[in-house]
View 1 (cartoon, rainbow, N blue to C red):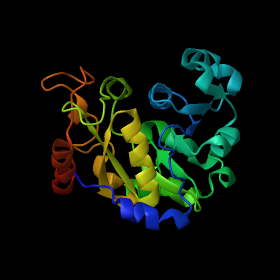
View 2: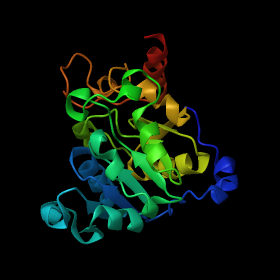
View 3: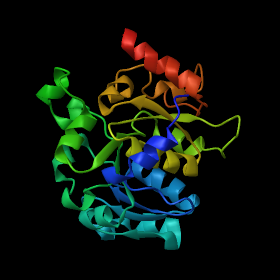
View 4: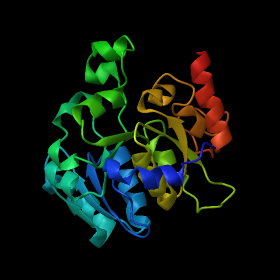
Length: 249
């Protein structure tokens, strides 16, 4: 596994990325659908507070807030962005320009988004490979620190695979980003909810686990099963093999 360098985190604090509290942090959610909702459930189970939002208004999140209990509340996207020590953006890519900019200044932002032209419409710079979906979000949020994560795992598998630190059954999730301190923050969060982080490198390397690559979705499916199938553990070494295969495809 490519480790997250703790010394880089310490030296990078002045970059403005938020350090995740060891025991509890507030996680903001811009988008609370399948992936956002699953991450919120894992976060609350790990002792974090969550502030949920979506495009339809706080009232539409009452069922999820009720399920999650006193550590959850609903808000507007701007309020969720302002409240979060760490913020998860989990919305259709076509809506990325609606993500509030100012409240995310200096914060680590997890981008779970994927580009699906049939849903998002064609985006020329993604079609021609000039950039990646996470880099588009980073350009929209120039003073935030975007880290790509959770985009290559089915939400059902994400909810099924968490294991305690040190468990031989623990799975790894890929992360990519340009700010070392932000990646450390995200790695700490992943650890708290039951996953190891595998650092793929700069944000542009997120292309190696976007839709259409060997690391997208299928590694977390039980061998021989049709997607989505039962969840399957993916170690850091196994994830690396899938990521490396993207370079050969």
